[in-house]
Amino acid sequence: MRQVNALRVGQRTPYQIGAFYMPNWRTKALGLSFDGLTWETLNNFSLVTPLKGRYHWEGDTELMNQQLAEAARHGLSYFAFDWYHNETTGKPGQILLNHALDGYLRADSRLRSKVKFAINWVTHTGFTPTTETEWEACYEDWAAKYLLHPDYLRVDGRPVIWVFETDQVRKNAQGTSDRFSTTAGFRMQRACSVSNDGGKLLITITDLPANPPIVGTTEFPPTGTSIQFRTTGTPPTGLANQTGAQKYYAIKKGQYTGHLATSTGAAAADAGIAYTNAGSGSHSVVLGFNWSPTRTHAQVYAKLFEYCAANGIPKPVVLVGGAFPTPFWFNEYQIAGVEGTSPYNYIGGYVDGQDVGKTYASSGGQVWPNTFAELAEAYEENTLKNFRDGRVPLHVPTLCTGWDNTPWDGPSSRVAIGTLRQIRQHFRNQQALMDRYPQMCRGMAIINAWNEYGEGGYCEPSIRYGRGILQAVSDVFGRA
Image (cartoon, rainbow, N blue to C red; front, side, top):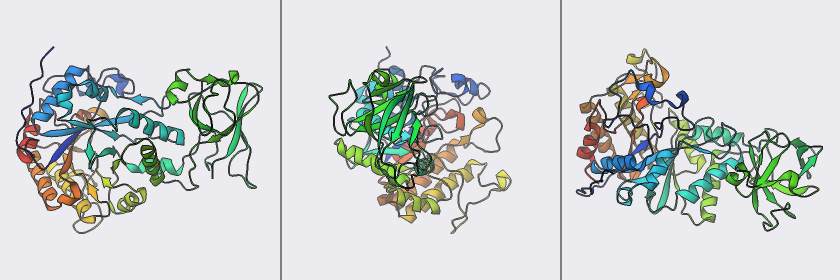
């Protein structure tokens, strides 16, 4: 096995520079688009290739050691790994594309101590929970595996979590309801029972109000869907040691078959108690969290904070990405109760002195630029606007390395690829803003990205740039 050289640590720097890590390159990994052949989308783009060649084995320990050593030598001090909670394949709670983060956790501890890790929760449609059960499953996974890990990225001793964008969280929270109820959801926790009626597993609400906003009886949720229970009486047979407010998960396994367990993983793995074997009669349960009638993303994050507090984890620093333009979103960030913002990328910039998005001649009057100079300026305008606004006390700016999604989405009118000189100057411009507003960024910035080859954002050594972008990080921000 190739030996990893000891890191050469240079002069201390006031900056913490990281990069988003896109785990999209392990051939045939579950959850990949393009039938798992993502490298093949780059066949006609010879420059868009890692200098080491295509790594079909992404997540391999030795490969991760090499990537961490490369990052550390050039001053990167953390990776924020894209993290996907699956809600699309009938296996709730399943974590997709986690091979790179798993590889990081197996990597050389000397390297991990130099390059910390964090979660970038990718909240695309289909990867953002839609029930209380699914929200809490995310928190459980983070708490069990990451947030107390000694190499997890922290600010003031508190773990940092990126949220790709909070708009989908907001939309899902507003519509959140356990999937066996109507879209109106529960106005409070409801006493109910689970029973086997002629082969159908039924949920029966037993304390309906005068004008119920929900149905009284409905079938068990669709096959593969998880729901959460908390017992209020005698637990079902086989779980007799779990009493009081013990939480259970149930997953429907077939037309009339369900399993009850103390975790989504156990239920999905058939390790739970089958309802048809759980004793006769009905079992009293309470459904879900006690969410209020109007649900917002503030409650999603509040439940995260509650969960962490109950498990001895310091309150996370949540950095949300958002939308464009920002004025509406500044208010939404405050409503959400988060302390920071940090975008994965930006579309465009602003008309001087206004909250109106610019249009660009390079894109035929659209709100996105088609030259790197304009794109870099847009990032800098967004950074300045976030710093000046101040309603959210922390903003971790993003360093742009380019945009070109042609490999994944076909011929595009949005292509903005820069030269090394332009990228270096953009880094300097962002550094100048960080130095003007040190209290707003705490010396932190993050690069888009380490390896977003399908969208044109990458600082990993490549055929196009060599080690030039990493060298620019080292030259501008110093060695960590």
